[in-house]
Image (cartoon, rainbow, N blue to C red):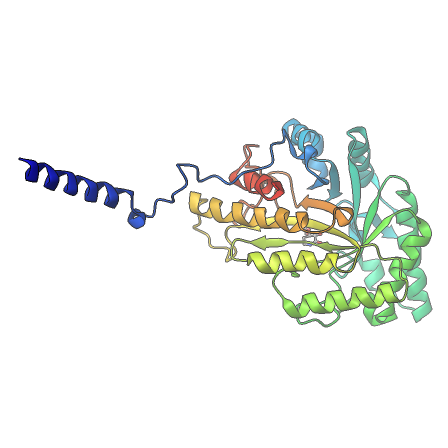
Length: 356
Ligand code: XIL
């Protein structure tokens, strides 16, 4: 009898040990698989400013869009309304209607405005691309545009992307009318002109791809170092961060750290995280993709939390909800808010990264 009982007890113990083993891949976390996250009511309470790129149409016509902006965001970038082709209608002629509407909305709701963008190889109006003149004529053309626009928004727009996307992925200068007609000096001149028009504005060089192209990252930081050594009024680096679920944690964090190592402001300026980087037509937004996206959002905030507080200019998302993202029709679901205005797991990833 005693022997039978021992055998039963032994078999029971073995079964129990087997059931508790890791063979079924159940993590030993006492049932808690969630990472801790910063306990805040909305993104306005985050340790630094969190912004969104906005468009005038939904801002005027969609109450939910306005409400979520007011509730969650403390900074605004005009997604398109401050681009040269929208604003510039001829020499000395401007259309500021949409940009002014966005700026007024931001100020009424206690938000910082980030200006995007003064000089970009894209969105240059045809009256400029077809302009002919000497090097000095081109300098004066650029000077007048920059100074008229920066003066118009002086005291209302806190910061500017002065130049956008000036280096290629291989590290060389990107061709544009300004490079052709002025030479590489156009970059420092753009900063100088903007600074003359508004000495209080924080001036950025904004660029994409820093988190995946090492050659580009090195070239960007070299250019920044050269400009700073010449005392060019450059105050920050914008990392656009149009990124995706296949990008690497270490590279993302390295790019943020490398920018901060210049001891200037760091702005993650156009954040979105694609779950369909290959633009496949038949993709659905599964839980597995949502989890990967959450991880990338966490790496971004962790990266920013890893640099000195005084250099954390902020993180701006490129859009407000998935529906209004420029990548929505890929199809893709790139932002922390769904097209139903619900917080996605990406939003939790964002808060996890803030947790210290
Ligand atoms: C994009 C806008 O989101 C689109 O609506 C527009 O059609 C094209 O430009 N880098 C930038 C942004 O600096 O200005 C771009 O915005 C996205 C890539």
